[in-house]
Amino acid sequence: MNIRSAIGFTVVAALVAAGTHTFAQRPAIPQRLVAMVGGTLIDGFGSTPVRNSVVLIEGDRIKAVGQVGSLAVPAGAEVISTEGMSVLPGLWDMHVHTMLNGHPDYDHWDKTYVNRLETEIMPASAKQLLMAGVTSARDLGAPLEASINVRNAINTGKLQGATLYVSGPFLQHEPYAGTDFFRWGVKGIDDARGKVNKLADAGVDVIKLIDQDLMTESEVAAVIDQAHKRGLPVVGHSHRPEEIRLGMKYGVDNFEHTGLATAPEYPADIIDMIKARTAQMSKGPFFWTPTLSPLWNYEYMRDNPEMLDDPSWQVGLKADTVADIKAALIHPDQFSYYQLSPARKPTLKRKFQQLREAGVTQLIGTDNGVPMMFQSQTTWTELDIWVRELGVSPMDAIRSATYWPSVMMKRDKDVGTVSAGKIADIIAVRGDVLRYIDLLQKVDLVVQKGKRVK
Ligand SMILES: [Zn+2]
Image (cartoon, rainbow, N blue to C red; front, side, top):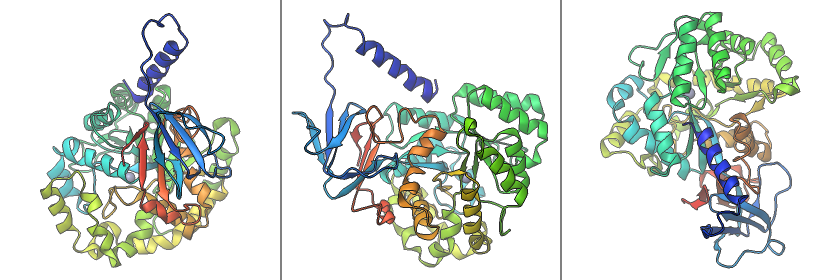
């Protein structure tokens, strides 16, 4: 069962129970009441923050939102003081790799940890994300069974971690050597539809398409069409111009990365295609996850590596894993992965602005897990770059990490805002995040599905 149908079933069951009085002889199970009281609430809808807010939580859902003096805290409720804090929806990171955790040598990592991904690495990543205030994350590219099992274990409470939306394996022209346990090649249109069906049958939440410019057009069309037939959105790489053109032509729902290497900007024909798409109200917003932080912060991290020593990234990992990663991080100046980054960084601002001006709805996502980018400390840096370097308003950046991701994943009826009826995924941080966005690097309080987990 996939997450959507699991939650759908719970909602239906709850509605049936609530609207039926024939069960009256059985006393209703009293739901735990929690009240978060006093902080300034940024609810995710974008309007004026609510001062001296009261958020009432019943079970795993938000029951009511108001203010001290007008919304009473019921007797018996557990009160969590949020005085002096900003209160906001749990963050989403729309592009993570839970199977990675900062190690710079992928060949070594894939070989060494293939049998430890499900039991150690992916659960550790999900836990670290949650402790960083990321209550939801989209995991784009990992072995199928492990992805489904870890996601489900979190959903059923067996593991503590960010709620995951998983793609399972990448679909691409051909897997790179030694990566076929998390990358599936596509050969012909029947195979394209078959692979999508296999992923859909296993219960993935999204299809991840990369190197689509190396596929035949009919294969690209088949992957996207079959995904849509199965009710799954398609997330596409956009490193090369032709990846974007093909993805746009056949209906990719959300592009990832800023791409185009060291080229100064997107070509005019691509911007025109985007504008033609964003002009269509009936198709909904057109999403793009620029994942700037690894490129933007590489030189900073290389030259100021204290963050690499932060013990937060070791949570949940075994001692030998930690030792392996530490030993590999001694020479960040030599990582081949990042050698072109200093030349790419100056192009990012222009490309980011082009997308924004073309009407794209940008989402917070980081490529979390790539070399030096630890699950525990990367997501906030993307908001920080948008706000402090690229002039995005803090409110817009927060909405791109809360409300808009929930809309993209069609989960906005249940998550993404702090409002009555939603699942209680809420974070709080001491101070004013609308003035100092980097306060998000130290999230003080995390509530997930109504339970305080930090
Ligand atoms: Zn990625």
